[in-house]
Image (cartoon, rainbow, N blue to C red; front, side, top):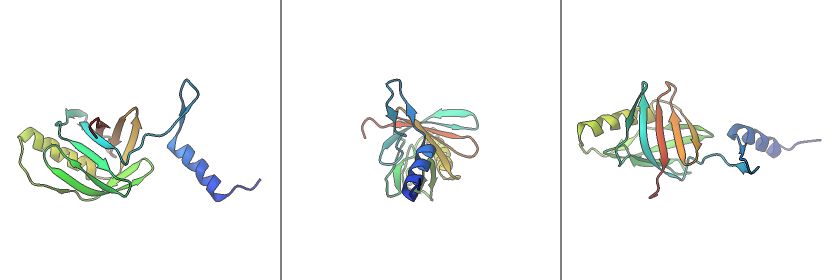
Length: 145
């Protein structure tokens, strides 16, 4: 039996993306990363988790345009998404000043987004982005978005 390259690609993507069976026997699709308005819930750096300000948001469009709020300032950037791997380019931000705790969270989130490739793992409306040091950005679907 001869397999076409398209069939081989389909099999590779199915294995790489991972699908599971729910109790009903239905196949579940992988969590989408792009085209979703994400609320930043918290950030774990060096084993310490900090809750995000209510304003912290992230969206990556399918064309690679990323934008959101770091907790105080708005940002935009280019994002490259390959499967479950995400890399952000330099962030362009507004330059407002906020309370010191919000500014500290913003600096930590900015570093987490741009220090290297992040691995995305999502399930049930939640998404975790993990960097090479094990630091994690915890997100959930923005109900308003």
